[in-house]
Every structure is written in C-alpha cells, then in structure tokens.
Image: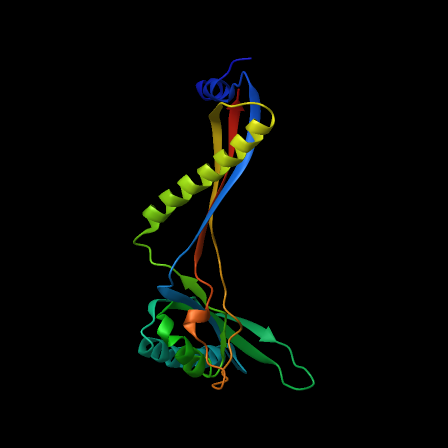
Length: 216
C-alpha cells in the first residue's frame, strides 16, 4: 500500500512510544451585549393571491417605518410566499401571504419593539437573541484557545501523575469552536411587566478541544 505525504505526516505526528492520553478542554467567555437580533413573521390574507400580497405590502410598509424609528440596522426582508388556506367552520377559504423580517436592534429599544411593532396587524415576534460586538473577536478567540488547551493539559497531567508518568508531549488537537445562542423570554405586550435588556442572558463564546498527549 502506498501512503500519501499527508498520511505519512499524520502517522509520524501521532506516533507515541509511551502511553497515549486523551483530554477534553473547554473554555467559555461571557461578553457584553452590544445589540439584539430580532426576527418577526408578517402575514396577511385575502380572497385572492393579488389581494393577499397587496395587504402584505401595506403591512410591511408600516413595519419598516416602525423599525426605522427604533433605529434598527441591517434590516433584511425575505421574499413573500403564498398558500391557499382551506375553509373551516369559523372562516372561509383564503389566500395567505407571509414573509420574514430580521435586523439588529439597540438594546434600549426592546420594550418599544414589543409595544409598537408587536402590536401591528399580522406581526408575530420571535424571541430576540443577544449579540456581542465584533471588534474584539480575535482577542477573545485567542484567549479561549489558550484556556481550553490549558484545561486539557491540566487534566492530562493529573491523569499522567495518577499512573506514575511525568512528561507529556502533545500529539494532536481537534478543535470544536462555537457560540451558544441565548434567547430571551417570550415576547409580550403587557406594559405592566416591562422587559429589561439587562436581564437578557449575555452572548457566550465557547471553545472546546480534544487533545491527545504522549505520556512518559
């Protein structure tokens, strides 16, 4: 069998003349909230597809105006879709048109979003998610990498010491990096129970890695 250079390099890299140990390291960093990611569904219905789309367009204009007044950035609107709603005992058959809207909301406008946009006809608000600023992403990721590796190294040293070994050499690192989404409680228009952006779970970056060591 002929091995490729990559396969040969991997065999050399993973060769261990001692005891092979594996350790899983993790690191997590909570960050301050810079903005909120909002999303909503907008729908309208009418007897015909043209009528439903026209009604949807009118409602979208009202939603756009309200979101601009709330200083929403990066506004995105999906293309509309329609479907035939069959008749039921309580309502006649109709064509329903719907689309999705998303954007970035200043945290201080959360209550106004629920009160104003959430009360518009045809709007269904989804829970918002918190977002961190992106300016320090590289610094945070470097810190997480170091902390996750140190976590794995500490575990491997404890395991090696338990079996009477003292020296460790890293052989392989498998990285699994991600962001854990944090959602707020369900939207409501009850003014007596205002939403406080400070109560939202902060955006949390997490890095985990599997490290293989050769212990002697």
